[in-house]
Image 1 (tube, rainbow, N blue to C red):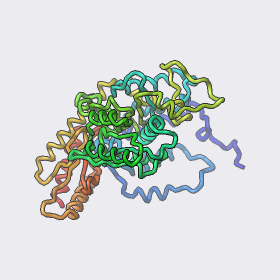
Image 2: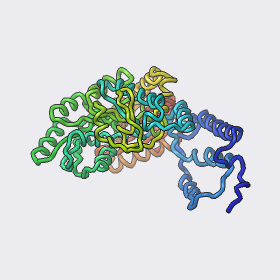
Image 3: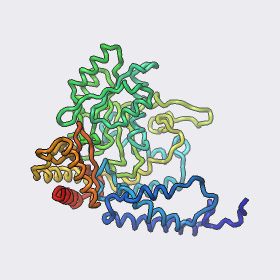
Length: 478
């Protein structure tokens, strides 16, 4: 057995203030250097990343400690650089967020003080700050008194909780004949959540979309009617409020009418698009979302927070209590005052981190006006990029911006579909190889598309200009 006396202060589980302060200062210095250099870092660099990952495999946990500078060197000099630069201004792939430093500071505080907020009685003021955040979100979405929600790790778990709540509210105990309706544009997490909620995969209907990638109401009506004639139980329809591939926003007002008429739970997937409600244009585009029974938002997208912060809102908070209610004689008494919420009674989680501070502090520190201005800029940038792309007659805009995403392709006139796809894949690779921006592609209705998704608070006109310039160079070189 190792002699415990050989342990040094730097290896102690509870080091003295000087040692802890030195560690924190070293980490902070590196973080600040990293943030300062973001505009100059490659938008993505995974060359050699697989070999590095393989070299880092450790089959056994270490028995002894490693000096902090050595570990921080490994992270900041070797590990972190070999990745997509999702926090950088040139990241236009998938759905960016950016990662506000103020939220990172909140996460440091929350984890350092390590208070438990799953039960209100354990930290009433801290729990109240999180409840405030969720009430702000319900107001933003236009939900009525009696609504509420939970913070989750992301949209996937928020969607799962929504489906479970809808299942409990709309279906009998034997729910296996319940049918869910999604669009061909819906995120795959919806079908996955349905399976995790106990539904056979065959119970998820995929409804075709129109030329603007919005769910076709006539096709939805046909599907619901056919299922009812077959003795099945339609119970939920999902409306897109900003789809991943094309940024499509369904006709949410029409879907709300349809759901009300057909007695369906109306779920709005606004993980990407929901926080555009802060803007005038966003509110017009998302009209009807206020009539949803449940809404998924991702603060780690539209509020630019670090990954790991999702949100579910429900029209009637009691639906979450019914689907998550349970108890144990080891728990303190739960709250009866409607202003005070025990998150464990409306969420699948009992043990959980304090996510609320990472949302509350940035909103209080910056104010909603700062987020509104940033989101308005993203709407402007997407429109500007779309108009610039249209100037090239060989570029086809397949999905014009409904929010801040534009999807396009090179027409490749005179070439076959196979050759056209190969060309567009080469253009994507050539664009990304320049490392000023990073763009992702998508296959939509059998066609490979390039897409710019503008959402990071660090992305500005010069970054979109670089993307267009590099695309032009890639076209010229092909």
